[in-house]
Length: 381
Image (cartoon, rainbow, N blue to C red):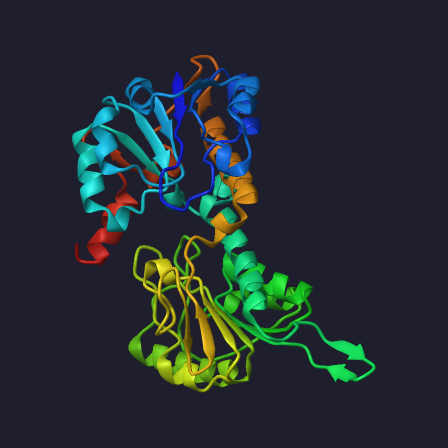
């Protein structure tokens, strides 16, 4: 089975879908690996590194796509390249399926079996292939580093000859994977950290990292079967904003991580909340790519409103591209290895498997994922 790994061409993307150690692992399983020339350059992996790991380096991108039985990427494929892939090819990457109707139509028309890695069920067995968690964790780390770099104060408490300097106050909104890493990073840097999440079940996790959990009584809340926060009712959103506004006003750093899977990010920090914050404070909106949690945030920009800096930079994991590539590549290798048939030396697309049933979006000219169909139906689309 010929597996092709493509060089990322999305502007500004430095992450690499497949790195040489993962190539070595897959070659030892019996895979025939080809990579596009220059695939690892942004992370300082040379073509020779890939050849040494057992891959063939191919300069002709078109020929690489046309001959592959499986195509690996990080970003979703350009629509123009889908016709180049042969019928029955398995394509594995992020797909952003809820916002890519044209892309899915082309994948169906081409008979491509398209796996959307962000749709993998959040189960124990899937943890080793969970690209969302690995990249979100890095995003949480980077968010704190960005905030610290734009704050005109230090984060830790210091006892100096001129007196005691109080620690910076950081407020993390959302205690999923990204939020928990942000909490841990801010604590390591010495900040006094508070956190809020609509799921009371995460309170112990927040406390275990040394942060204070902010309790706001919203009534009945919970999480989806996949572990994501559920959507709030309008009255619950109002109560949440009132509770958070008090904490934001006292905070030097606010980091928002709230997202609802398959939907636009909720707007949870509005202009009135920003206005109550002290000049010099910093907000990092980690959800800016899906609509943003913060009123006034702009994608790939840092804006200042009433002296408060709002950081809306996209692709935070891409700012630590080497580590992000190591993690993504390992996730990808684990996914392939989990379904690898050593006797046939091929990827076994087990249509009855729960992981495949969740993540396989298109197959044999049709939409395959029942999870995707259900969520689209809930959205009324």
